[in-house]
Length: 202
Image 1 (cartoon, helix red, strand yellow):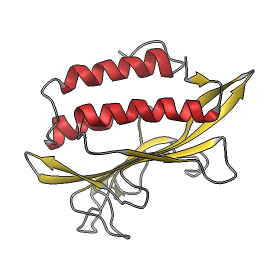
Image 2 (cartoon, helix red, strand yellow):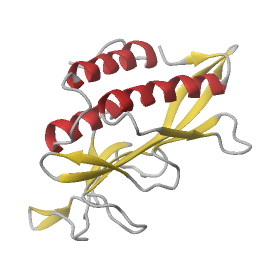
Image 3 (spheres, helix red, strand yellow):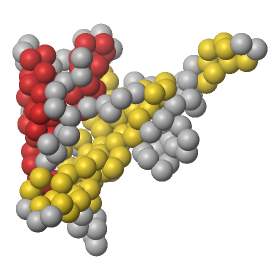
């Protein structure tokens, strides 16, 4: 079942502590997860990997030298009887090939932003322009598709999914050689304890 606690803050703290522990055990023990409750919005909480205002955190890669990651979620606590239930309103995961500036385009981005994507898939993925500011376009029939503009469908993307992609595909150096069972364990915690789903998808 989803995270339920006696107060919104307890919900937020429980989830942030889980993410912080995951980041420390797999990516970097010096990284921290920031979180804040906007003034006048006690039922909402924003979390971000690194300090608020940072555009990304730097990770060491064996194959690419450095990879830059932006990871943020917008959380809400919904009252259910005498308790509060944690839900994710939005998430943004972005990967850059160099330290991003204000107008930098990520190489890859995963988004969940209901209400902001019109009739497109709520959970979706984009292949970005990157530092070259050039879209990847593929031929389709008499025209082409811009992979930065189309909304490629995904399921709900877990933080664990992003970590697995970083390590297995982009060569990011994990803290431990046992990163894979740690990710599986964390995924099981999400599906068995933090989600209405009862098990990992097949």
